[in-house]
Image (tube, rainbow, N blue to C red; front, side):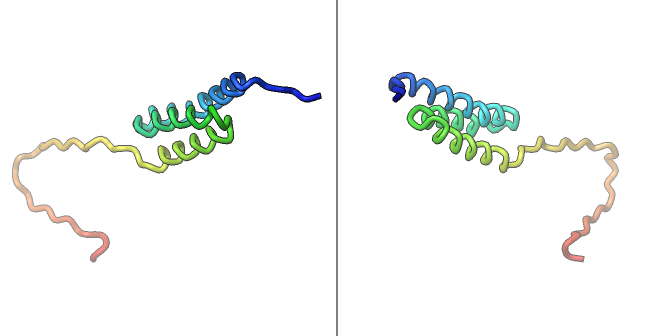
Length: 98
């Protein structure tokens, strides 16, 4: 007995797969302060999930997850406060060139 799935139902399943897979880069992008790759990964996972379901959404989400994780977080600038205003001689020794 052959089971026929309507095209609209297949597209809804693909959209759901794209949504679920796209949540991974979106949440990771929000947590790692990389909103550009997070939103782009979410949208492209949705688009790839509609025609191809998990076969399209999963690789796209994986690629954007990798792009978000490989980029180091932006460090906050170090604040320097002058405690003693008397000038002193300071020399910095380069550890690579003794």
